[in-house]
Image (cartoon, rainbow, N blue to C red; front, side):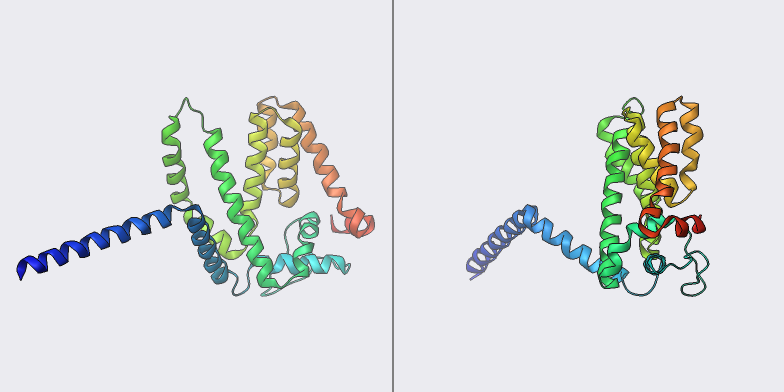
Length: 240
């Protein structure tokens, strides 16, 4: 009797082990992983698209811009104002043509992509002379853990800080790789959206990146004039 029970337990254990192996293979399957991450993102996006945040202001300002309004004097909800450049409002125009929930989900997806891109860039620009290649992923994980609350807050509030950080970091990477025009464009676009990355200009002068410094100034002028093509130079000038 005991022998029979023992044999049954062994068989059950063998079946459980086989089931665990099948589950492990399924989890390691790229298709399963993709579905898992897509579902996780959809759940995250659903929770983050509820309620109003800064992204609602961006969309409202974009709509108001095409109506010929002064997007900086308008008060949107709860007394908040739009503090970014007109080009940013124009770039968001296609998202005003679709339901707000879908627009927010697209914005969140873009933010997640930018975060992934930032992780890749940080791994590239960390000098191998300072830290071994094998240790770089751990350093990046520590950095992400330290700024996790900042990241979560920015995504939750629908802010543009991650966009500005990504553009500035891409510009820095282009500087490191000697692609001065691309560096100037990325940094100029970041400055055009919000003036915070202006600190990169003294850095360029200090490092004698004359070409990137000059191209940044030229791109800043061009990007400030560009909205005039779409909304009229008179309207654009009145908003500067």
